[in-house]
Amino acid sequence: MALILIVDDSSFQRRVIRRLVHQAGHETEEAENGRTGLERAATWKPDIILTDLLMPELGGLELLEALREQGFAIPVIIITANIQESVRRRCLELGAAAVVSKPICEDDLLTAMEEALGDEK
Image (cartoon, rainbow, N blue to C red):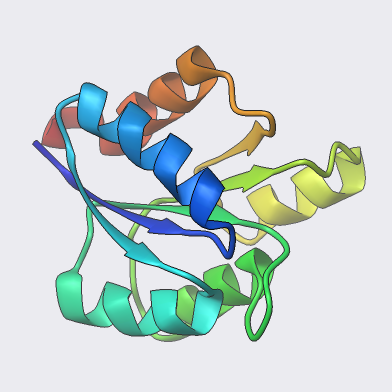
């Protein structure tokens, strides 16, 4: 069982993601924006971070950059409605483990999580 940090400013999206993660047998913690997500990542040391791209205070790209600057090696999966290839490429260049499109396809998210967890499952 892994600890998954869900970072999204939408309580509805957090609820949807939380349900999928729990069904896969993992625990969750949540944050409502990237700044809080960064603080909680330092406190909880999650196995994976699932984050929205566009959020107030600190977006998903900024969260990813801050995690890397602070030396965290936590896999980050970006979940976004932005389907532009340039945005997807930028996320991966910054070290995202995967980019999953909204609306969330359960199989896509679970596959990305399994790949990011590797042997940690």
